[in-house]
Amino acid sequence: MKALDELTFDNRFARLGDAFSTHVLPEPLDEPRLVVASGAALALLDLDPAVAQTPVFAELFSGHKLWEEAEPRAMVYSGHQFGGYSPQLGDGRGLLLGEVYNAAGEHWDLHLKGAGMTPYSRMGDGRAVLRSSIREFLASEALHALGIPSSRALCVIGSSTPVWREKQERGAMVLRLAPSHIRFGHFEYFYYTKKPEQQAQLAEHVLNLHYPECREQPEPYLAMFREIVERNAEMIAKWQAYGFCHGVMNTDNMSILGITFDFGPFAFLDDFDAHFICNHSDHEGRYSFSNQVPIGQWNLSALAQALTPFISVDALKEALGLYLPLYQAHYLDLMRRRLGLTTAEDEDQKLVERLLALMQNSGVDYTLFFRRLGDESATLAVARLRDDFVDMAGFDAWADLYKARVARDGEYSEEQRRARMHAVNPLYILRNYLAQNAIVAAEAGDYSEVRRLHEVLTKPFEEQAGMEQYAQRPPDWGKHLEISCSS
Ligand code: AMP
Ligand code: MG
Image 1 (cartoon, helix red, strand yellow):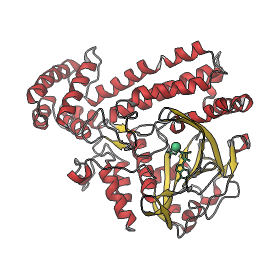
Image 2 (cartoon, rainbow, N blue to C red; image 1 turned 45 degrees about the vertical axis):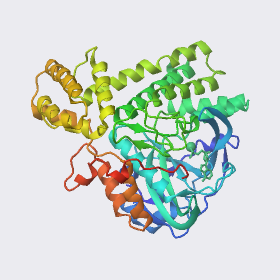
Image 3 (cartoon, rainbow, N blue to C red; image 1 turned 30 degrees about the horizontal axis):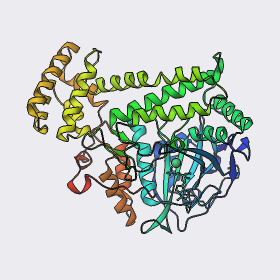
Image 4 (cartoon, protein in one colour; image 1 turned 135 degrees about the vertical axis):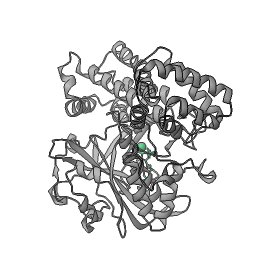
């Protein structure tokens, strides 16, 4: 275990130079205080969880103190936002503080979000409010616990600094961890500004640091792009299987590592709704729940365009062609497991589609349905769950198919079925209303609810004593919360 001042830095992105980022110092928040910290994320840096309680911790992650070896930089990038190209984006309120190594040799970017104005702030104030910082923190750690690749979050630091959104709020900072903060939009920036040398430098950097095994391939850049396609297909399959709606899948929010990145008005589905739009500024539903699948491919095409200086168009097209079949395979595999199936049959996809259509029509809770399906034998479970469906005859027909399918799947005891299904079907997810409750308390100075919710969500598959209230459908007030995009 290390003390806070013993972190080992090696800031490889900063060394790419001024064409890639600008040196900016964080602008401190007033009266910093720890809101919440993640023990698991601290462990990634070999830090003892107790360090989070020390005053210097809050000072470091609110811009008051900086390690000598840190090199805070605002990164430049661009990207396609809602389908249109924005030529000049960048870290407008976040700073890459530096890159840290742990004892296992893993490296983690420390990124401080809400750290003040940068040359890329455009009309913004460089700040993040407490509410959005808490949401990013909870989502990062919850997704990770579900097995969905994501950036991580070390802590949220609150403050008394006033920040204006629709009303006056308080500024906060979230410390984000990821092996890289490079986005699709980084490649687009150098492509569209016609800077081939820097673009090649960036491609080499990503290849060497994040895809070194692709060096062994005859066409390393093509191998890297294929890997990015594969990782995105898998990540989005997991989003769809677990009901996660990202909300702002602009190419500047897509990580080059295929991890969930840049949390805004995201949501987990409560009731299953394929057409759900979590972002209230998304009037056309470009980033609706079911559109995330084709948008994943659209974003990869935007990246492919930016990689045309390195890879032939035919090869890029072929690699892009891998996306949908890979997505389908991962998705179906996960959904089979969510249904408790251990074998594959051709008709399984139809079985899943029919179930989702029934759930859609009846507004069935997406998470609790699968959890309860695994509570007991298939026969008993469907008999109990049918009451949730308006179209009971339709559900009965599905249940007959399901029971027959389970019977063909193999012989196993109820306990085996429960253990296997509960290991993939969470009891606790980050429902918007749960986050909202925690935020309201935190805004009033009580951080106990954020901390408790975070704790519960670190073990989403494990039933936890006394935590029943986190495994319920939302109350009426919490069903269709409007999550403001201003963050
Ligand atoms: P986002 O929608 O959070 O992914 O942000 C899109 C772009 O706007 C990024 O370049 C951000 O850095 C920038 N941005 C968002 N909010 C602010 C803010 N409050 N101050 C400065 N820049 C911001
Ligand atoms: Mg962003």
